[in-house]
Length: 303
Image: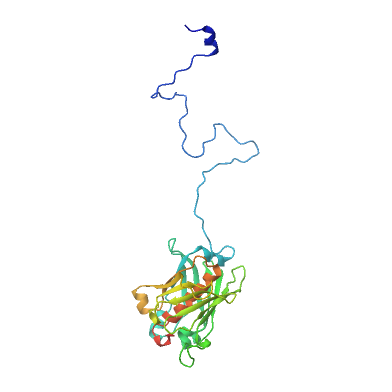
């Protein structure tokens, strides 16, 4: 028999609802994922602008090479595709007269868009008399015309002939400077020098401190050099570790047969600086001139 006093102290417990019971009708419907809408009738205080909260959407960063120090933009591209533009192919094919080279530099990882331009500057007499051994200047510019890198190649005679294989004047050199659109315009970044090698084409990449940082070595001699590997030399001596590659790619039957316009693919070393990548691009241009330029007159080739 229950005690009425205990009933007043300990009220009777509510029975749990059945498992299949539906929630009461007064429960609000579930809200979609995201920010909840503001309550009805809400308005900001007088004198304050209304703030609309939008969901946060993460987007991939967009890198522009023409902002700030444009040279540092090379760090965002692990590899580049360099396409030589066919210019004056009728003059080169029938008259054997070279024209100024022009290249488009593309990002092969995001739709293949063109990001940089490179154009040679040389005089007509130099191109006619010296062919692929000619002296020239070349500027790499962004799409809005800002100069990023400038190259200078002095005139050196090809190996053999009047010069022996060990004479410094018989080896080709290209010097690299920062462009006018960078934080340090005209600063010497280093140079690329051809080495004495009787079997394989070999180039040393020298930085601004006159220290060899990379060595570019081909797989086979002569005009068959379509692939050259980049070796790390920062630790001193010749390293056996391949850290990058410069490779000529097939440009199409019409370009390969009737023009000297070539395509190249370069993969940069992972830990390379922006200046070192500019040097390696200079090595690419020098290799193009030495091995793949002036196809109509192969006697001017250095090997």
